[in-house]
Amino acid sequence: MKNATIVYASLTGNTEEIAEFLVDEFKSHDVEVELIEADDADEDSFADADICVVATFTYTDGDVPDDLEDFFEELPDQDLAGKVFGVVGSGDDDMHHATFCNAAIEFDKTFEKTGAVRGSELVKIDNAYDDDDVPALKAFVKNVVEFEA
Ligand SMILES: Cc1cc2nc3c(=O)[nH]c(=O)nc-3n(C[C@H](O)[C@H](O)[C@H](O)COP(=O)(O)O)c2cc1C
Image 1 (tube, rainbow, N blue to C red):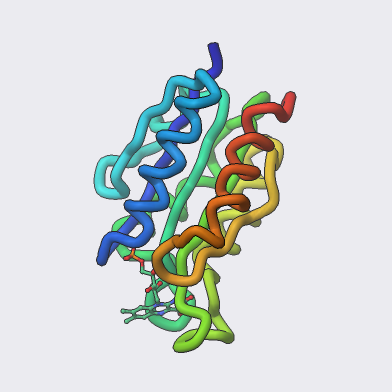
Image 2: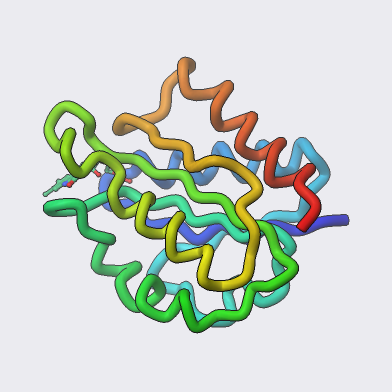
């Protein structure tokens, strides 16, 4: 059985709800899943995972959230060869169009330095997810589960 670890950051709950959706979706694919809040994430978080997922909102001027900053800085030093990664972001396209989901974009790029392979394209969600986002979130999970690293 494959297993997935989702590291997420959420200030007002939008990304947390997305992460919880992903948990349920992974379970529906018979994937064991662990959800780790940003404050508890460290260099060991992905050690035992086949599938490594980051779900993050974007903060001021496109920044990675404060509580994911250390994890983000240390990510390139992690050896995640043989694993699959995927990133989901929440941002605000109206208020912050120029930096929409920039933190997720940065994670998606930085994962490439770990040796893990991208199992799905980055998914960007405008604030809270709604019914229109469900197909993309389901496809994200299906892709990372079925991708063979
Ligand atoms: C002070 C502040 C700055 C923000 N800056 C950005 C930004 O640069 N780019 C973006 O896409 N969203 C930005 N957002 C929007 C949040 O990322 C978005 O509302 C997200 O859904 C929040 O996720 P959360 O509910 O999980 O905390 C900002 C929000 C706040 C409050």
